[in-house]
Image (cartoon, rainbow, N blue to C red; front, top):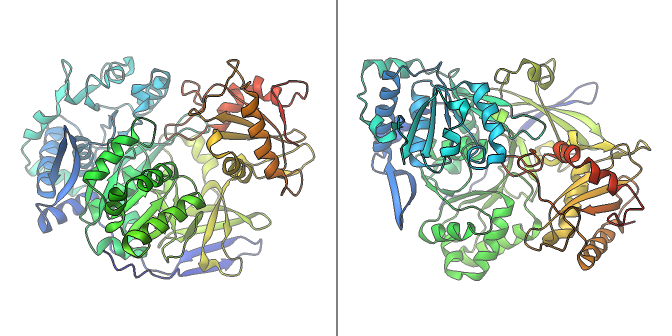
Length: 598
């Protein structure tokens, strides 16, 4: 087990005349690799037989060592070069995490060929195909890869990919390259020369944002962004280098959390990444538990909904609980705040098993920042704390309201432009080159910046009532979700240019209350929602945080209408647009479906 000798937060703060705060880390940035290939070469030499990637294969596991990974990466890279591929011929990936996908990712990065991993839903769900087409037209790929030609056949057969070369691992369609055949490539001088040209500015990949405010945006990821980010992690959390990390992970590589942060953290520190083919959803979480009964990690990276399911499962399975916590150094969550009851349960279970609590923490960042920008690394965090700036990052906090600040960043792990989107660039960076994030933070201790900050929602989701009263929608949403718990899947806070705050509620799919096809009609269910929301209002201080009305929607968020993003979060703008009729019903006091909360 790692020593868990945490560093102290060290920051320098400068206050400008207008109240803007400039905050930088005083911890120096450690050594930065020239490219991701340096990590692979290092561990292929220092730990050639150690497993790098593992995935399920039948009842057991397929694994590939560091020496095998380097050999296959170089062979595939040589084959791609022989086919005329390189920096000007992007490749897209339709399927999720897998060993072959990992080899392809490192092979393309080895020769400076941009890789674009797309959300699996774009190929698997017909209603999301328009987003696949959008990304294809934006990237203009020369190559498309899928793990299974049958499973991803709908994606591979899109008209937008008709002239694009296909590469497939299993169920290979006619005319497509078979992945294994390309592993017969012969490395030589051409490969050595291509690798030598891959420096910090080389484009490693393009990630598409989830498109919560419109079409997905292409975010270039340079080699420097990826390698600097890992140096930032290691400067703040040297425990990652104390022993090779082992991570069991289900999260998609189309998202920066798993595809950049977790994958590269394991690779750069010579660890093992075990690919969990389960998910924290009904019918698939059982597979995650099956996998954890065979392999557990030394580091745990996950999202709050998964930890909630895990706590419930571990409470019923003492043997699995003992395995999970026995050698665990860190519990890291992202995507949303970890509910206090889940945080406490994890602490209690860890103490029962090992007599100590692993480091529990989070950070903050975006696809545009590769991702980590702020990291809480000194221990003693509570849910919602996201820490202080990472080394080499410049952070600007602009006063927004009372003790709330808008956060902007720039540095070697932050983009300076989007992919082929000058119109987006014009409104995404300020005149000093800082990325405008539209995220808000609050200091943990107003008198001590080194204590770090808490995430406080997205400023772009705030609004004003007709009275001019400002409403922080993120706070209202979190309060509502905490009060409604098992009754709901999610809520949308409304009230812009209205007299009062309302909620459009997506009921829990596990409950399925009676409905008329558009709204919930189940009287008992409606009464429970009313009672719980009235409980919130008992502590409301005024119209800025008092919920006056609610409407329970029968239809789940629509993927076809982009009401839900690839990573599962709500697209608020799309929901309010697509459900304009329901929004009007919410504010029609004569409509029986409108629940009166006040």
